[in-house]
Length: 204
Image (tube, rainbow, N blue to C red; front, side, top):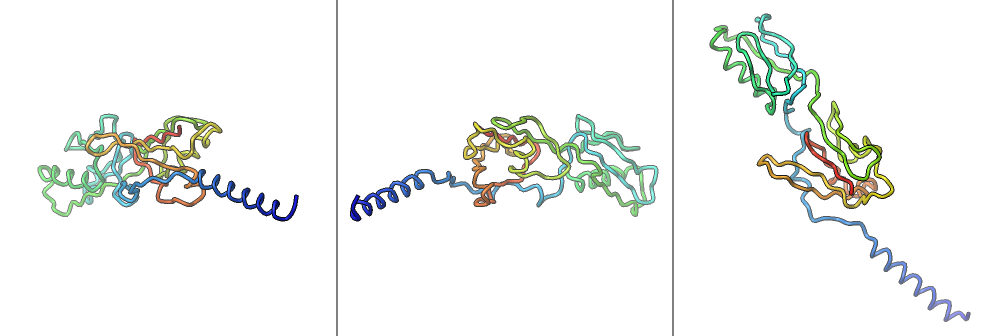
């Protein structure tokens, strides 16, 4: 093979390689990930099985510990049943303060509500992962962390076609496209969303 022939062959090989790389570019969606709810930036929302500590200053008889029942309620001395699920500690505090006014005339009876045991934060990982199932955590988990908790994708998984299935406040179900490969390569950190309670991560 003469020099010109070798040169033409090298150029053709480079062109084919370049074409192949272009055809294998990672999938990126035109999606505004910044609009998604980030629970880390908001007050915690209480759910069933969460543990609460309710303290009424200067009224020890009204201070107590409680676990939220499956129906989302707790029972407080004097006041009775309170619906606390889907509310923040501040909202529960304000409700208790309002209802206490019928029994406690001392305006200095300051109420505090704290979450002492997080048990309601749960999400699902399903599809082509090693161990699909429902997972719970005491801290907020990202998409990549959730997939890792499920043992990672199987060799059959389509890592570019991951979806987070999320229920909107209006009750509608949405699918958020995620490219897990880009997250692993640290090329799309905005896709590594923080999951909210009830989310499903699906790996096809």
